[in-house]
Every structure is written in structure tokens, then in C-alpha cells.
Image 1 (cartoon, rainbow over the protein chains, first blue to last red):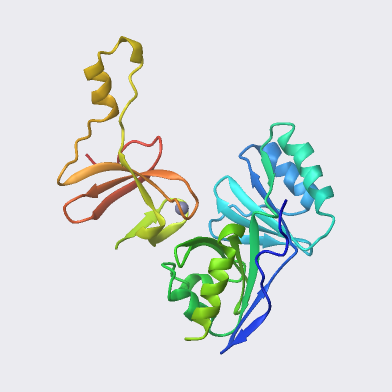
Image 2 (image 1 turned 45 degrees about the horizontal axis):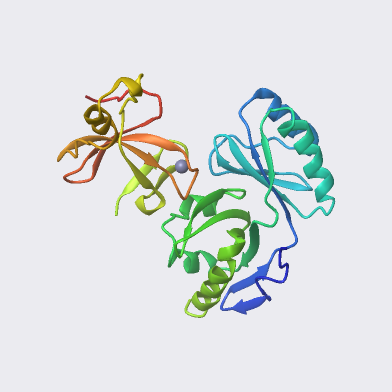
Length: 182
Length: 91
Ligand SMILES: [Zn+2]
């Protein structure tokens, strides 16, 4: 059984850095190449999956992040998550148009806010944030302190960072530690 | 440390990638008809060149896609990057 109390993440504030847990969120991994796949996703979620690398698209309910040429992750605060997942699964996975996986519990979303967040991340991240910062809705998959993460540029100085649950406590401790030294 | 231009994500640090060894090794059509030596040749033997080498790489911590690279193993200079299934752009 999933321990929903793990990791223990409380809101923390440091010098122009604010860290908090952005949960519960529904997260669904979508994979597909066929035309039918894109049509069905568009119809069910009312969203066009971004085809340009390192970008995302959003509507009021969902954000779709580009992960690779045939892979996306969508996330949403909507609590009708099972209905959305079931609909996607039945319409796409079951009919062999693509593959839909519910990864809501696999990933933990941490929100980073403040002027110094890029400076903090850059102390342990090989990714060049210059272009990323300039465009709202940019996304990237990279490493932070050797941990795989997906980062979504939500607003100016406001990031949603996705990390695998098993690594989340480790990263959370690292974020808190590093924030103190910026 | 060097920068690799992933054909899907753009320029990224080498630490996001993992090397998959020599590229363009063709699996024998009829493995059952090969001698042990011939099979070992296909399975284990690699050129391990000092100089221009054709390699497979995987953007392991990014898009997780495989691609090919032409790299000088003596100085890590990357001469070309091309997608899987494409012909090498340089000889
Ligand atoms: Zn890539």
C-alpha cells in the first residue's frame, strides 16, 4: 500500500526561495505516434500535445509536458482523476492507439518559488536555464543532485519540479539544505 | 565534461547521457549456423579505435531516446550526430 504521508514535506521559506508540496495531483503518462492517438487525446482532454521539444501546453484543467517525440506527461489538480484516466485508457490503450499509464503515485511534485531558485538548482544541475527562463511553459528533464527530475516553468520564478517518490525525500532534504546557502 | 547535441532535446551536458558502445553492428541473420568463434566475434569483439569512432548513445536522463554519434575517442570531438536508422553522414 502506498504511504501517502511519505515523504513528509511542509512548506519552507528561505532567502527568496519558497519550497512546498504541490499535491495531490493527477499525473498520466501518454505514449503514442499514430494519428488516432493525437485525435483521441485532443478530444478527451481538449488539449493539443506539444510537438516542439522542451515545451508544454495548458488549458484551465491540464498541463501537457513534452518528454520525448512520442511521450508526454499530463498533470492536473482535477480530482475526477479516475474518470479521466479510465476514459483515456479505454479509448487509447485498449484500442491500441498508444499507451496510457497512471503515474500519479510514482511522481511527487514540489513547487519552487522565488528569485533565487535557478541559482540554487544550478549548484547541482548541468542544465542551462538561460533559454528555459525566457519562455513560460518550457519544460526539461534533467538531473538535480544526480536525481532525475522533470521541471515545468509555470510562471516567472515559479517551477513545478517532479521527482520519483523514492527519491523525493532525498531531494527535498537537498533542496532545503542548499536553499540555506544561497 | 562535454556538451552533446541530442537530436531531440538540443544541447545538453554529457552527464545526462550514457554510451551504448560501437554502432552499426549487424546481428547475423542465421545465428544457429555460426561457429562459436563467429558468434563471439559478433557478441563481444569491438574495434575500440583511437580516433574516429561510430557510437550509439542514449539520452538516459532526458528524452531516453537512442541516437548515433561520430566521435574522436582521442580528444572527445564530436564530428556528427544522427538518428537511429540513418546513414552515417561522414566516412
Ligand atoms: Zn534528448
